[in-house]
Amino acid sequence: MLISQGFQSALSPVIAMHWPVHSLQVKPLLYQKHLLQKRSQEVHNTLELMDKFQHKIVLKIKSFQTAAAAGLSVTQGSKKLRVKGKMEKKQEEGKFCYSYRCEESRQDFDLPDS
Image (cartoon, rainbow, N blue to C red; front, side, top):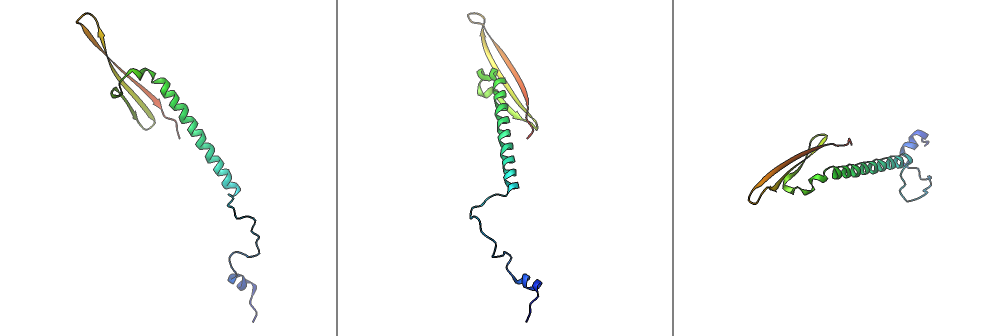
């Protein structure tokens, strides 16, 4: 009995056995490699930006170094970072006379878009 070519191809396996196997190692396709490199570069750029931003914050809040940790607070809004500091200084004006000075400061930082 003769079998038509279309019917025979439907019965044949999905993978043709005559295809050569070049390597057993998994190699990403060219476009996947390009996407991987692009994402890797984006992550690298984001990390550099975060490092620069952290360095700027450290430089701007040097005045808070003398403040106690209890007097320093950091809050984050949707696109802002707010650093507040409160420091109380005791000043001696005479032998038994003291005055206290309270300093409050606040600094707002814009967060970078990610």
